[in-house]
Length: 174
Image (tube, rainbow, N blue to C red):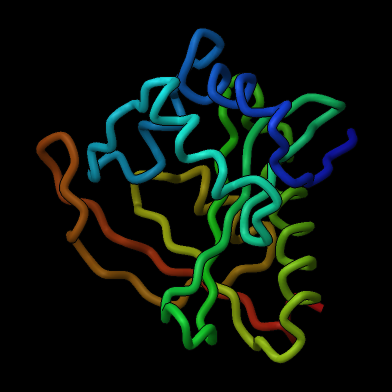
């Protein structure tokens, strides 16, 4: 199995849209990636307008598995311009690619890259919710430690779920 992270390129845009939202998408990932936010499915035109900010973005990569795009990883500063508190995210677009270890490998590569880019950063976090059991498993498999739970704060389909925070220290990851 070969898993790589690569920058978004202009030539990838249409395929990424199609597999994430368009004619190739099963959209199962949307039921687990913060569905309580009720994000709408962007049109092709809306997606194209967002893409320039992703091309060569240091905090966004495509996940390639056996020479095809299967998902993406991202990172953002929770504390904005202070840049001392970084959190990561990951999406595997198609349910048929879940359970193959792709997310775990990609997340390990991503963490190594981020810790390398930010040599003084001691901690990287990840937030999910109790309805996303797969993300909880991946987080723990990669070495994240459960740091906190905000109980019953995510409302989805008539029920409350917990928000769950994980973190990994540089020393633990190394």
